[in-house]
Image (cartoon, rainbow, N blue to C red; front, side, top):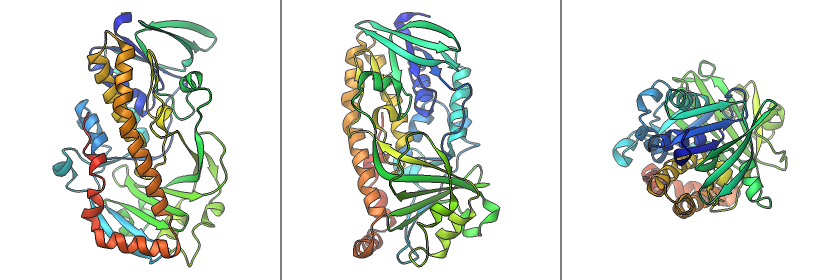
Amino acid sequence: MALSRSIVIAGAGIGGLTAALSVAARGFRAVVMERAEKLEEVGAGLQLSPNASRVLIGLGLEKDLAPYVIAPDAISVNSARSGKELTRIPLGGATNRYGAPYWIIRRADLQSVLYARALNHHDIEVRLGCQYEDVASYAKGVTVVQRKGSARQQEPALALIGADGVWSTVRHQMYPDEQPKFTGRIAWRGTVDSKQLPREFNAKRVQLWMGANAHIVAYPMKDGKLINVVAIVTGQWNRPGWSEPGDAAELAQFFLPPRWPIAPRMLIGAVDSWRKWALFAMKDGGLWGKGTVALLGDASHAMLPFVAQGAGMAIEDAAVVATCLEEGKENVTAAFSKYANLRAPRVSHVQRTARSTGEIYHMRGPMAFARDQTIRVLGGAGLLAQQNRIYSWRA
């Protein structure tokens, strides 16, 4: 493998695999190291707004993804305070408005499509069960230390991209004092067979229920056969990690009557098995790496999920870092510096927007009443317009 065009990527998640496809499309060879022996589902569903779907379509993945995606008609915005729908944000015309669709997809399906395409690309090698351990960075490249079983070896390359998630080993080695901070929020997720719920829950739309210190998002997946349910609550439980089993009775205490009407409580009650994880976030603007090592996705800028942009930002990162490498392959340090300068303001805006959106969702008392009135006045079109800066982005 030619050192001058080899990029090592730590992590085979959404961001890492998209980065591999993106750099390979620009003439580089990619080696993806993934510590897991097989790719397993982390999380259930994803919302991919036009800024993210545009990148995937640009990689030629639209036909591959077509059997798995659902294009929702709208986001139904509901208030637990009133028990009523406040408005619907229209998404059916997203392609006409933004030049790309709004998609819902199972995370595992997106990852499997990316993985299959990577396996079939002559310039991409995916190594499962291969753990990244260390890196030495030089002006002209890197040497990456990896372990597979008991075998340890060194890999020379042009650059390393750390796409190994919120608990990134690559980031920790470069920034040992910069660790994710607990946000005071806990996410619970589960799925429901759509046949178990009334017809109104099976429509091609995202349902958002806002309440005091908690909210619920639900939407169809897998050709409408499953409903993905995510509940986010305020709490102190903050065990680091990806997820662990959750007690349904514990979650139900956040959604009791009379504060919560029957519809969202029905959603919560229909889930048989819950997983929960504490939400951690990185500093605004992210951390982007040093020299010939770059960071991408949650490794750089893990954020709250309130504008559904975690995966989207990783996908954007992949497109931008590949373009910067193509334009600056003679000086990777400068290329990665440009990548950081392009991404930091964008990511910072999305992080702040997600944080403020969460505060709005979880309002209570008079503030919740004022929020509901404002949403009614703005209407769905007005709320959609507030997302223009995020959805209109192009690499």
